[in-house]
Length: 252
Ligand SMILES: C[S@@+](CC[C@H](N)C(=O)[O-])C[C@H]1O[C@@H](n2cnc3c(N)ncnc32)[C@H](O)[C@@H]1O
Image 1 (cartoon, rainbow, N blue to C red):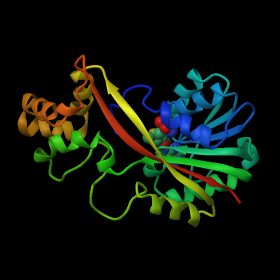
Image 2 (cartoon, helix red, strand yellow):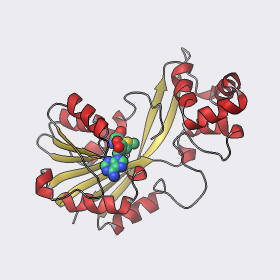
Image 3 (cartoon, rainbow, N blue to C red):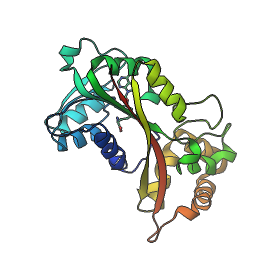
């Protein structure tokens, strides 16, 4: 994930994943790479029994403090340990925005499959391709000052297929032994109330700092303003539309 996403951006993505996995009252959900617990909170709101796992102890602490009824643990999604110790097997195993952050996404999907109940649902999301996500325009605005063009999330537009490619995503799930139900598309609007809300996190990022060192803050701000002009909304804010892909699959 790039830095600076507006709060609440993931609500449509999480709602889609929870609907696709038919999460309701009493559904057991394992949230891999739970972060600070936003997806877990959405599942709890539907009455699900949620266990969250993340390798970042600080995120786990925040999730524990903010999502009361769920259980959160520090752990590695590559190696989840005995399924009963975790509270499984789970009707639903989620990996929201996790797979591009792990060393071995295939192994993580195999673990997801292992700890899911027979016929349980594995649901996982990733960013769409750069050209499908307006946040890529931020990287493009700064491109002339960067050694190699990068998006804010660090994804390169060239190179071998990534999980943003739905065929690659399907194949990875198949290799993990999952039966793919589908790869859905969800568009999430990122709303920024004003220019500072859009630009300040970018300036604080690695690519923003690099550009500022080379060109100065005023030039960088002007470049962003120009590149994103058509995404400006009434009142001076900005709306960026970003596509995400959601894999829905069944465990054997
Ligand atoms: C982009 S965040 C996604 C957080 C959340 N799922 C969401 O949808 O916003 C990725 C999360 O994966 C966690 N993570 C990265 N590698 C992991 C691993 N091997 N095992 C568990 N969590 C991991 C990070 O600490 C981070 O919280």
